[in-house]
Structure formats: structure tokens, C-alpha cells
Length: 112
Image 1 (cartoon, rainbow, N blue to C red):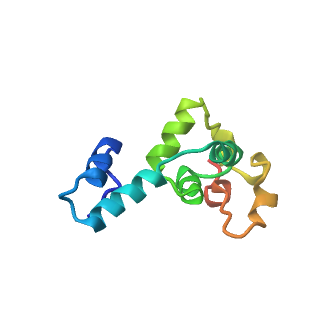
Image 2: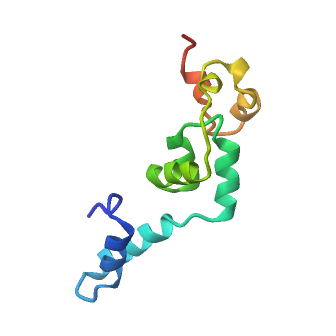
């Protein structure tokens, strides 16, 4: 059962329904918990926003991409296109690329 597209209300119904098999109830509860967003995640989101893709941030935070996009929109985080084009315009690219698993989007796109 793929619960990643279910709404929070649907997940809650599945998790609390006594007639639903326990494995599905547990999976729904885990999905609900994974969508929880705390203040430490906000700090990471703001720090990563200029130099990482939404997919990278979602993977790092362990949240669905839709949740990351919603939080970014809620707090008014904007992307500046110039930060995505070259390493010179990506101030943290050289430093962060030294960290394991870092992939600055500017390193994978080409300037127009």
C-alpha cells in the first residue's frame, strides 16, 4: 500500500481504524510521523535552500517533497536563478561539496 500520496486525514483514519490490518495502521502512523516538521528542520531548510534542490532537501530531512515545498512557501523562501547557474554564484558550493553526499545543483547545470 502506497500511503505517500494520502492526505493527513486519510492517514489518521487508516491509523485509527480498528478494522484495518495492523501492518497498514502502523505504516499510516509512520507516514504521519514522517510528515511532522520541527524547528530544527526549519533551520536546515533555510540553510540548504539556496544551494540544494527540493529533492535533496526532502531526502536530507526525511520529508516528502510536497511538505518541503509547502514549508518553503509558508516562510516565503524564494529561489534566485543566478544561484543555480555557476559555482561562482553559489557561495557555499566549494565548501559544501566536500561534505559526503553533497551535490550542489550549480555543479550539475550549465550556464546559458
